[in-house]
Image (tube, rainbow, N blue to C red):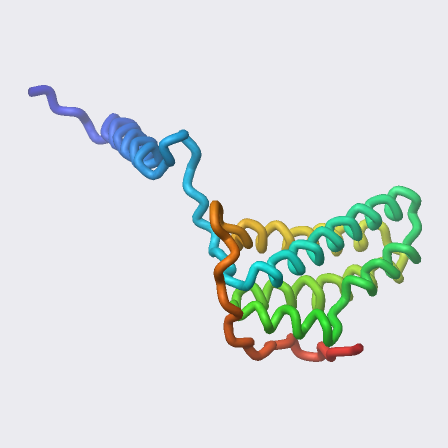
Length: 177
């Protein structure tokens, strides 16, 4: 048996670990070859899910409008749209009603922290600061969609409404109507 010296052991070890990792990926794939969807299902009533999807589509359209306004250096319009995205009582009630603390926290971050920060950045007229604030806002969207899902097929219409949870607002954040 030939002895492998110490410097040569690391590449051999690395190849073995990599092979095991790649093999484990194949185990967790579905029959069609796609990886499983490990996002958390929000088990809320069908009507609530449809309403939440409507709200998120509106947020996406507002993000599109922000890009359009930024292309024209229309910081006043960016601030106006960011203000519309900001936290209010209706949004707070909707987030609390979903019954998932992590989801609610992300919604609060989006509406009560990121949107007002975007508004303040736009009001400053500083393009780089406004783009950075918009990027942070979009990062919250991405994180939430990577963590949660709203639908489970084929039958997704049988959940009951969870108990509301209390809202935990960041320091200095107030609910306005």
